[in-house]
Image (tube, rainbow, N blue to C red; front, side, top):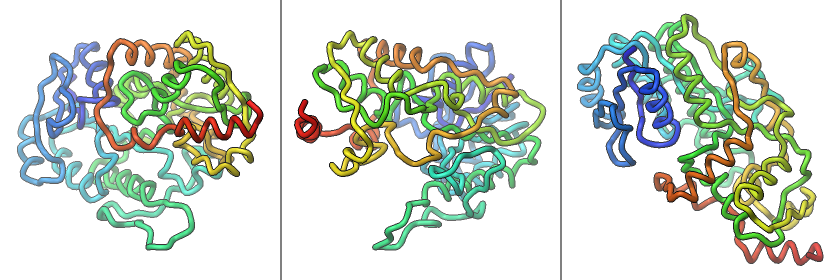
Length: 343
């Protein structure tokens, strides 16, 4: 099996490349060569996906049985379209990693694969869906870009040759966003810890290694389609997640569960200042039965927490990314909220 990974040097792309090598596959990784290195045994090709000349040169390294696209999160749909058109003659299948943000109803509504997607053409540029100054509504720019990129992948390849994966939150060793690492470091620091909402609140993060394995399973599948890739609804809770963070770090900290309205009144930014906390009804209500029917398995979140701590405490360093700095509440702000609760 010959596979091309678009990305391949960090987090999901690296997990895909490592898993493929473990399967005995021949792996080519295409990236700019600026963020980490591909796993040993991978053939690396450096280039820019937005440069047509580089795409032509990349295609000359083919053919491949499949392409797994893990690096299009910041690309405009038209760039994804150009890439898929260049690779279609030399690739059998295309696995595109999208996001649940592509749905019209996320994060307010429960979702299935049949839920409506946001509007975006396959050839949209990077400004499509960008909000005007002064806009007070939800920011759907990112979701529209991803929905357009999904259409680009299907337009270039026949539908039966394309698998689209829509994960929600991906955690695990190598995470560059900073959600789980922040909680682990906060647990390690100990003391009273501001815990959002209710401990029974269900959440659905998925392990990066499980997403990678499913992407490769789809690379050898014989049918196409779209799959939500999340943990089962109701299996994991915020209390279990934070409890696992305390356990693996050996922390003496204790969780102070704080109602949503108190956090909102204190202007705590949802999703970032207390990572994974969001009050929208649909954010953790995503059906992924279709993926499980296709063979997707999702390890317990406690295993992800444990392995991420091993990576982090063992000197693991994520690729530098601006999203890291957006996560985590300032200690002074946390202390002030806790003081207001009498803690």
